[in-house]
Amino acid sequence: MVADTPEALIAPAADVPARERLPQHVAIVMDGNGRWAQQRSLPRTAGHREGARTVRRIVQACNERGIGALTLFAFSSENWQRPRPEVEVLMNLFMTTLRGEIRRLDDANIRLRFIGEPSAFPSTLQDYIAKAQRRTAGNTGLTLVIAANYGGRWDIARAARRVSEEVLAGRLRCEQITPDTLRHYTCLADLPEPDLFIRTAGEQRISNFLLWQMAYTELYFTERLWPDFGPADLDAACAAFAGRERRFGMTGEQIARGRRA
Image 1: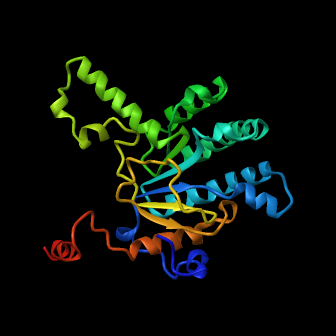
Image 2 (image 1 turned 60 degrees about the vertical axis):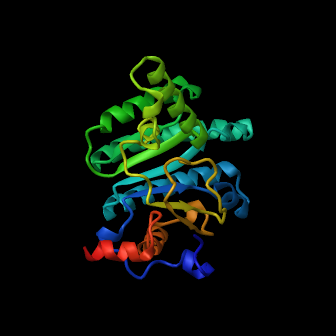
């Protein structure tokens, strides 16, 4: 939820929460690149380039703090509707950033994964994505997930299609289909569901991101534009998360009894 005051949204946390109170999976919608550039009378593409530098800082901060997984919404399936020159710059930036960062990520023991439909991307970018995933597949530190040409509704529809194929092939009966069955066919089924969702730049919506996975995710919205978002802002979001009681449909009394048990 939104913090109580603007100061609470942007001020660094007094303390980084203890590791047991940190979210183990953080999902971020990186909003505000265009507004950051416009405030400086720069082209929108300059904001995207600055936003890519922020990605490096936040990935490093998550890895240093022991957060297990970070999922970044880099390019949605709806982003193809943006002006063509901007999309072309984003594709080029995507490829140059990937090419420049893969060794750094590998050296930091970070595992890189992509979710979404890659077939719409240029073949060269598809090759880089495949190579980056293979190179880092054995790493055991932070799992960095890049959602590119991804949409939450696409994810659910894809899972439903795969389940129907199992039924048609006789490997699954209709009465066996449960929410848990469908979950196993969604993206990120092998990772814990996001504990904390962060959206920058003051927007307060999920925007078709990880719709299935964020059923019980804690939401945190900040006015900070993504290029200005830093490790102190990440710590503030984690501190807000640490102060919340996660009930998962239970009562506060049930949660308290579980802690005493």
